Length: 89
Image (tube, rainbow, N blue to C red; front, side, top):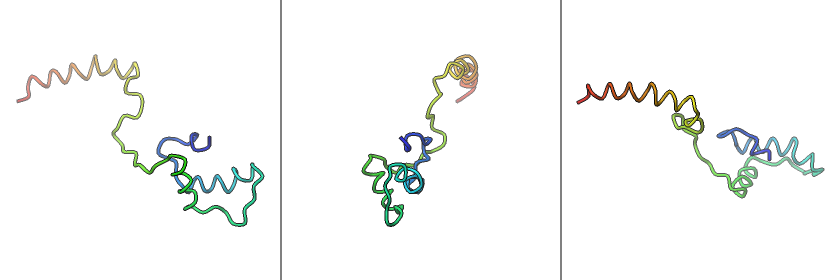
């Protein structure tokens, strides 16, 4: 649940390591001789099905079909582009 509560693109092995060492394991009553390392957190993320990707800017993640966006596209952007297309070679 902790990993799912993080925003898109903000899940990192370091954040998982800190959360496990400071809150998750102590809340479960588990004590360890040494704190969990980043490498172990990375392995756990892979076992849980997470994979390393880069979230690129400029890609619509959500919201491109909102009512106000569709309205703008249909009533303003597309007619303006149609006007410009008449002048294009």
